[in-house]
Length: 322
Image (cartoon, rainbow, N blue to C red; front, side):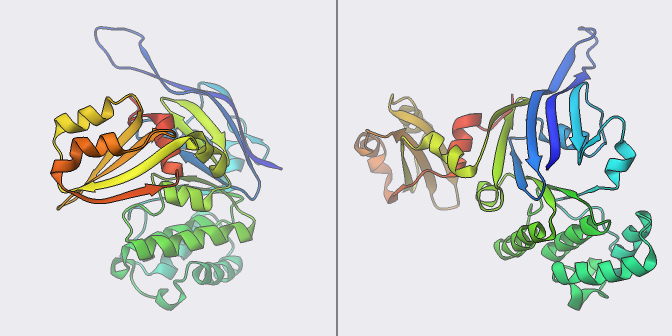
């Protein structure tokens, strides 16, 4: 069964511009995709790519300009109220909870908002607290929760109406590695509850680990839609090196970027060094690059397999939507 069906979806906004009347901005440009029931589907893209607009349409917060959207067989235009009873969503960060209430009382409050009968709500809340690992802290005020615990409570809140489809918008945003790992395990276990999940995240490792299929969107258009391994095959002919240096100036970085066999160069900086992630054509080696940066003091060199992040960078370029 198809849980989410999106066909030729378009969303335009009118720009407020005194000089150019009736100018429009296309946030979502003729996209189509399907999510199967019980599947975790990833929607990836840089900021401003159209992800948020798409999610707002799928969760009935916006109407599309053109195209059709069906959630569990219900039309987004005709059946918005029915759809809201079958979906829920959560987002990264700490907003949307009542900090002076306990975790248990937060869930009771949201159960009331969804008109869940009290006897059903009590049983469901106890089960949810087990699923999200907060049973021991159910009577503790949310203001005393860690970031990870608050985000787990967000997941619990998204389960309170027993939805068919859950939208998770950057659920591990701002969490430490341990908190993020714990939350990913909880999210993965939601599939055992026969939930359909649409996940947005900027963490490629997370998408690779959790999602059965992934769509990459940029400038309002879907650039690719496939299984993670198939997306990674887009860079199978690349030779990828990570070179850690103490320092390197912009002139040398530009020299490396302009070499004809360099497909991509990304730089991550920390306090004591810079990490160059260099994507080369498969038949090329790194010796000529090392000759450019040699006098800067190379700390380490690693040749690694292509990742989903490499494929993503190849698809979206420099990671901007402009």
